[in-house]
Each structure stands twice: as structure tokens, then as C-alpha cells.
Amino acid sequence: MENRNRTGIPGWKRGLLTAVVGIGMVLAAGAYREQVTEQEQAETLAGYDAAESASGEKKKIALTFDDGPHPVYTEQLLDGLSERNVKATFFLLGCNIEGNEEIVRRIAEEGHLLGNHTFYHVDITKLSREEACAEILDTSSKITEITDQPVEYVRPPFGNWNQDLECEVMMIPVFWTVDTLDWSTRNADRLVEEVVSEVEENDIILMHDSYDSTVRAALRIIDLLQAQGYEFVTVDELILE
Ligand code: NI
Image (cartoon, rainbow, N blue to C red):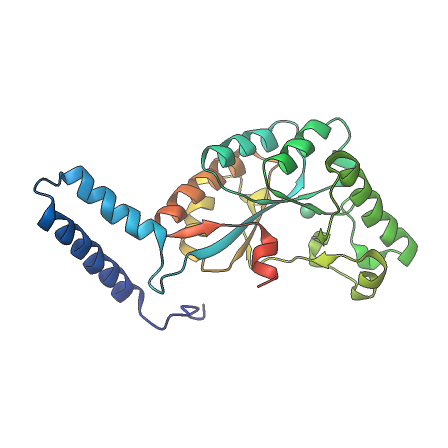
């Protein structure tokens, strides 16, 4: 895989730099505070690590969940995101909204971004213009009915998008940079390992809130990457930069 380290500083050096600065902070603090407990030292180091990357800015990353809302797993995920104060992006299928309106409302109320994933999970490029527009517009209006907010982003199923549609439906297509293939893996440990080892700053991670394994993996991924200094943002923050 290509080296996407944008700082130009090798990872081990960045780690060392962070550690040295962190220890310096602890020593400086100790000079005028007589007693610094080990626990406090560890907290200082961890706090510094978690707050910033070597460049001094938080490394942003976006988790995206397609195919929901799911009557069980979406809420489990929302609980975990809320505990961690993390925002994510949900691309909903119109056909899954009925009966799950409360979940859609909760996604919006808790500050996540809602997007469109067509009504019946169709390949938009295989439909007539009229059918394609209906797939998208019907889904957006179902979401807007519940949330009172316009839907501006669409994730085309299979990543197939027809740019000519943009002028008619006024939506921004959102693709991904890391495909977890969580629907085929169904193994939380493997998902965590793959994502954490592969992920880099500004990545958009594709997952599905339709599986127990995905929910468990996503929350562990958050814990591990937050400790590495990543900040989880909604996808609009990465796209509109
Ligand atoms: Ni999908």
C-alpha cells in the first residue's frame, strides 16, 4: 500500500516526539508541584496523546453506516456513540424507515448526520432518470418528514452514481476510502484489527449498522483510535474541507 503519511515524519519518530514532549510536560509540572502521582503522570501523557497529532491538529476520521435504520442494532450503536460523545453518519434506506421513525428522530436529535441510500438499495445507473430520481427523492422526503431537516448527502449503493442526476436531485454523493466488508466478515475482532491497522487521517469508513458484530467492532474501533488522537466527525466535515 502507498505511504499516506502526510507529515513526512516516520511513525516511530512521531511517537518518540510525542513521548518526549509529553514527558517534558510532566517534568515541568513536577518542578512546581511537589507531588505528582504516577496516575496523574499517566493521565497527562494520555491526555496529550489523545488531543493532538504531531502536527498539532486533531486527525479527523468519519464512520459511516449504511442500510439502516435497523430496529435493534442502530439503537445499540447510538447508545455506544452517545457514551463516547462521537458523531457518525447514517445513510438510510427509505424502505427501512417505516416502523423505525423514532430511531431516525433519535439519530438526528443526537447530532449525527443523516444521508440517503436510495429507497430499495438500487443501482441508480441501471434505472431510468425518473425511477432514479424517485428512489432518492422519496427517501429524502421520508427522512425530512421525521427530522424537519433537508437531506443533502447520498451514498449510492454499490458506489454507482450518475452525475447527471445531481442537477435534478441537488445532492452530494459520498463514497468511502475504507470498505470494511463487515457484511461478509461478521467477525468483530477481525474488523477491529483491519480497520485500526489500515486507517489514516481523513478516511471515510464504510460499515453497516445491521449486525451485532459491526456495532461491537465500531465501538472498539472508536476507543482505540481516540486513544491514537483521532477525532470522529460527520462526513460533511471531511468533504467540505
Ligand atoms: Ni448499502
